[in-house]
Length: 499
Image: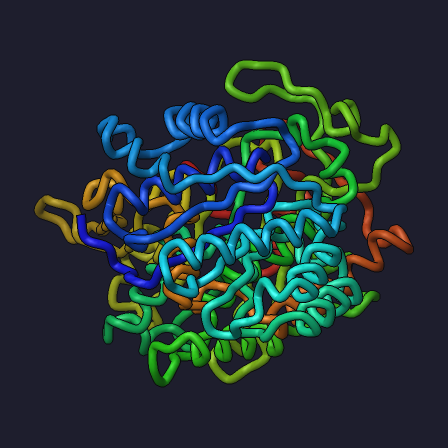
């Protein structure tokens, strides 16, 4: 088993007994290990408050790998080799002594292998602990090598633009920007990454990728699940913060960015930041025209009754938090001038579906005027999850003696090509190991993304502008969402059309 990265590495996981670590991080590290991507010398220092020995923690990790890993085809010997790389460290995040002890552990490991390791700190912690942890990492000189040492921070990156700026200032006081990896797991998904390859590696598409040929673009991230056990957290967040500001904005950047001159992280991130700066800000007086917010009410999903959002445990019965958002944006630059970008996301919807749909303009002449009613505009659909495919819909002749047309599809299916595709966290963790920040958000990107929605956020929260719509659980959202598109002769591409 060859190792892709040879530099010895210390990986420190804050919150190692938490939900993210058990479901995503340790399964991802193990899969990277099985497939030869981890360094030959590495140790995962697992920090947590719970009482564990190295042995009991190893049993806990193995159970989670069986439950959550995509890969179950491994031997006892392989598990034993990985298990030896894990150390459990009881840790009190509020106690400075714990950071001093961690420094000793890391220094001793460096002495054991006679090498100053690369150090990666994964902050799988609540946002209110970030300040204390980052200050202590600097105070005890745990992240002092600007090249070898990196920190990974999970979203949310603040809760509005002001808090995002505060967080970025805090981090920049303690670390260099190149050391900070702000992780958004959506950017690690295979299909999202493939948007760049699809656009910039194929001459047939990039010349059409502009307002001369594209009529509109839709980005949908729909979930069948409701807020489940996260009611108290979600009620303080909502769909605008939880999904639009990060996941959907990042997908927008991948779709709309200008071609980078070279495939380098700095160049790609510059182009993404340019997109966010060019998104037209929605003025307060126009918010009702460009946005729709809603909450799900009682309904049925997969034959089961579903309670409404206001009846969910942990949710304030008088809550004004949205579980659904639909909105229309414009990007004011030469490439996209006049093209509407539609976004929607919601909980308790008809199906789980994340997709990008590029709708091209109609054929400009009347060559097939006798078949005009049968003509459908070309569509390019990029399915992100649960399906992972790229589908091109175009017109073709029906078999038969007459010239009759019908839409047909050409599909590239990721699952057929690679049924055991690496998960998003595997991709992103490997990038951190290799020091590649391409798929991670830079401070200016974070702040611009918040700025795009800041007027909307303030208008909804402070002034209650825009009526709160409702939609039954198990539907595709409120009627007002459909009306948002109908005004320009568009409609949402539903699951039935995507698949």
